[in-house]
Image (cartoon, rainbow, N blue to C red; front, side, top):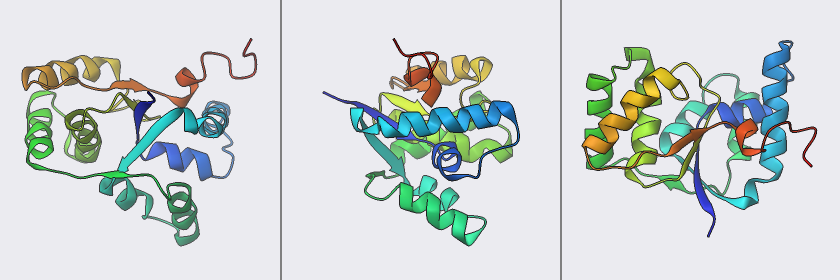
Length: 162
């Protein structure tokens, strides 16, 4: 059985963006593209929030991001995810600008997703916040997803996979 992986907005953004001038960002973009080629190893899911975020900005860039997401099933927000979202905002706490990030976490958690794939290190893959997120989720009876990056799913050095 394939692991279910929730795709957060940074994934289609890095996948479709022009190569970055930053060496770190360019490496992350490269790892994202390599992982995307292996995406059939996972059952990918997204959300309406993902679609909304990917629709913003330059029209051509938005269309390219949305094209990459075609065919990916979307999780729906519900009473449970909204309750968890409110608890995450209150207890972690997430700053107001990070409410969408908390929403990605709530959706993936409530729907029992195995992995949340992201490059968002500020609010999602942040080890300091992650511990508190896990505590809040478990306190409400949910098992949070494993938060990971495409690079981590490649199994280390993406240019030396032996």
